Length: 270
Image (tube, rainbow, N blue to C red):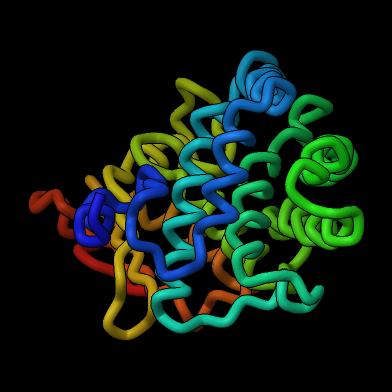
């Protein structure tokens, strides 16, 4: 897939053969092994039980993780293309190529705390992810660099919720990418299936989310809504996660109401 084709696709699938704005050799070495990891895949399946089966919330399982991983890598690529300098790997003396690996690992593992409980799951994800990383990272890193990588991945996992502000741009990418899974009822604001509250109604209003190069900022997030209720999702989910992420000056959000008969909100820009 060419860069232009990837842009049209909105970054929904990471293509290792595409032209990226970052050194991708290390990511392309690690990612296939991560995607086939038996324990990680079992955790992703199990994490939906508390969220969906027991609490009746929207999906937080393998599909969510797939979306966040691809959105995170797309967001990272656009930020690098726009000249943003990341600090997570760099602060440890790690290579630039390790930035994308940190992002991929954190995206894949950020929600595994759901197997303990939906509430406060980001904190439960930390010890679980720590065990996985202790096993996984030595395949690709020596002991010292494995510890450094682990610290950055765990930081990004913890900060994907708003209780803790990211201290690195890598962590900021995970926080924002988590909120970008919002198309066709896939809101990250928990709602009960079949409910009629604002969380449910607004989540159904988002029809399409596209990430592309911006003219005023490195990243333009374009959101198509089918009614004005979608503004609630944009403001209370995506804008709320963007605030404090470290990416505020690099990401522009534009939401457009595509239903001509609903003129309450035609366009908002954040």
